Amino acid sequence: MAKKAYQKAMPERRRRLLAAVHIAKKQLGMDDDTYRAVLGSFHVGSSAELNDAGLMELMRHFERCGYVSKIKPKALKGSMHHRQLSKIGALLTVGKKAWSYADSIAKRMYKIDKVEWLDGEQVQSVIVALIKQGKREGWALR
Image (cartoon, rainbow, N blue to C red; front, side, top):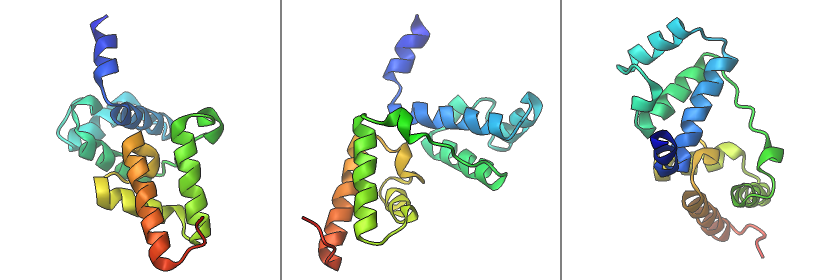
């Protein structure tokens, strides 16, 4: 029962990061000993002991090892987060920018590597930043 109360108190972004760590571990086919050795290089025994920046660094390590994110947009379809990400995608298309552009905004603003890992308020801030950039550069915004 206490575990569920803790999980509800944990920010959504952190839950997503922890889930992504375990998905990456599984996709890379890491056994427990190898995973513990990787965590040892971060001076922790569990990924839950890492702060958000540490989790991001662990994800970068997994990406260097060959992890490829397989986010399924259909699973998010209809959610506010999905609609916000769709808006970012539309703004990037109008501005002829790649998703890495939005990721770099997220990195600069919040020190989080991927827009998908931001919470709703943070994603909204990225949208505002893209709209302001679009107005400066003369994108066809309505």
